[in-house]
Image 1 (tube, rainbow, N blue to C red):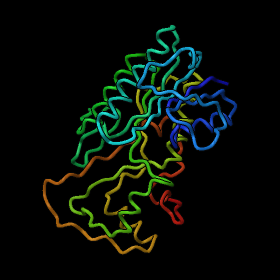
Image 2: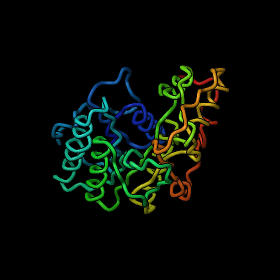
Image 3: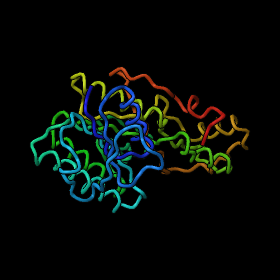
Image 4: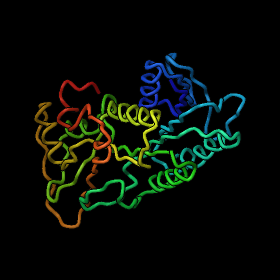
Length: 280
């Protein structure tokens, strides 16, 4: 069993730490503020935007999972976490010569492609926002720190407590139909399961690629998704926005590399993840 440090214990980090702990791994969580209930694993309180104290945070971990989340979409929040915070965590181990492997959660927002293109790990990152730019810089910094380090890029996360599309469907929001605007999703249970899957590969010595796109098997036009959700939940069908040329179409995320590694999806499509009843 391995010693694992989970940096960030939000919903996904907490679920990951709990699952690893239940599997017999020695897990420590790192979080800036206390949890509402005592966790089933040791939790250390620390703000990674400040230099970490070696006296309070051990360095004898085999694996560090960096799964932080910003409090807002302000680029200053992303800079604090993904530049200053990641720098502090990496240097905490480097200063004592410790060399754990790192697994970092990033986002498919690093792809700014907006014409319905397919993107995968070989596609150029074209961040269209300051927040995505900080993610790209953090990925590069992580890879520079060690050849075993790995990045997983999640697409739009949904699940209990993440009901953005349901609220839009319930409100009868008008949707772009022509040309199609694509949506890429991953259920939060799959987020935890993907991380567990990659961690298992890392710990058994499998040589991973530097990066994996984690998005379900069904990137689909938003019109199709919202029409299906409305029918399932008894909402009025969406109205179509007037057709137009040159409007954004987002991109389509290709998960073939993760699938080829052997991952099996809990929710392969929105039609699996959004079935009622949906606990929001």
